[in-house]
Structures are given as structure tokens and as C-alpha cells.
Image 1 (cartoon, rainbow, N blue to C red):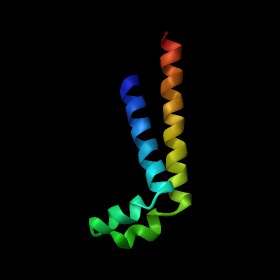
Image 2 (image 1 turned 30 degrees about the horizontal axis):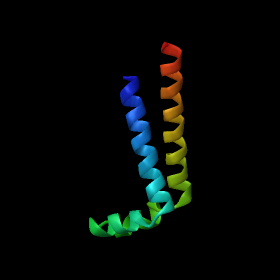
Image 3 (image 1 turned 60 degrees about the vertical axis):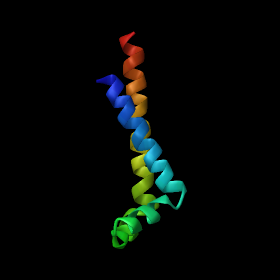
Image 4 (image 1 turned 180 degrees about the horizontal axis):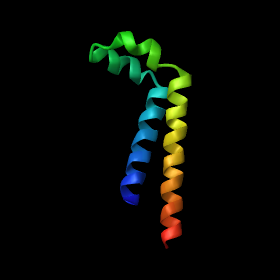
Length: 69
């Protein structure tokens, strides 16, 4: 469980960071035909909280693994 928690946290942090700091998200949404949703999703008030929550998730996973030892 803890290992899976760390994997989900790292994957979501990497995904949010890539979408937040590079123009990857407009290309992706344009490629799948959802470029109309770009105005709602590609904002800092959406992507930065996702990044923060995933970093908190990583912190919880590390804390649980340290506590179990």
C-alpha cells in the first residue's frame, strides 16, 4: 500500500509539473480534440494545487515508511 501511495504521488507530481511548466498540456488537449477545455484546466489555480497535493501525498508516503521502520 505504501509503495503504491508513493508511486501515485510521484506520477501525479511529474504529470502536474510537466503540464504546469511546459506547453505540453495545450498540445495534448489539442491532439485529443479537447482544446475547448484548455481555458479551464490550463490555469495556475488548477494545476498548482494538484502539484501541491501530490507533493503532500509523497510526504505522507515517506512519513509512513519511516514510521514503519
